[in-house]
Length: 113
Length: 117
Image 1 (spheres, chains in turn red, yellow):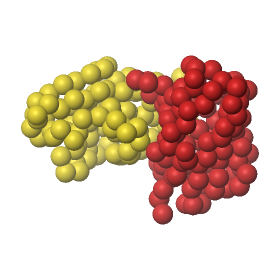
Image 2 (cartoon, rainbow over the protein chains, first blue to last red; image 1 turned 45 degrees about the horizontal axis):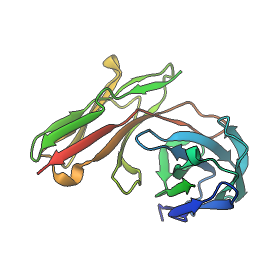
Image 3 (cartoon, helix red, strand yellow; image 1 turned 180 degrees about the horizontal axis):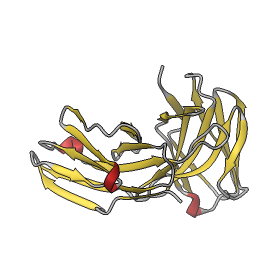
Image 4 (cartoon, each protein chain N blue to C red; image 1 turned 90 degrees about the vertical axis):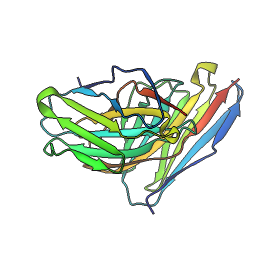
């Protein structure tokens, strides 16, 4: 099973809402990532978890809160977002130390009203 | 810092033409990986190829081929006999060195390819 799944596919939320994005993989990958992609731009790394510990935070605002409850699951909790946070959020996973094997999920398209 | 440059922002060709997408990269690492991804309008990043820095062999896969040249730091991608379904945004990417067991992909700005019938 070489698949990364993400839910929901689409999400519309208001600036006062709290929501969460979910990412799951069952490939035994111990590195998991969140990328953000604005329209007509390349993906940009937000967070990296390695062995369930946050190893990289690319100076992301605190209104984005990642969580890795176990080796298969990665969440991104959203709170008090701004309209400029509207984007495609991509999850990815890889084997630590094996960058040649990195898999992306289909993404969650987020719209903040 | 590592950098990937895709100088072609948009390319438009007629179906059945050959088209080459350029990618130039910068890195100080001796070990690195290069990737090409396709992103159709649906948004999913579709993996096309990866190449490590020690393997300069060119590769052909059906209508796709890749030309990796370390001497010019280029990793170009050619589609032969293009089809409308090839229309998408194509990203070239470079992996940075390992960071606590994980790695970061640095993407180029992407090339929007439109194949017209």
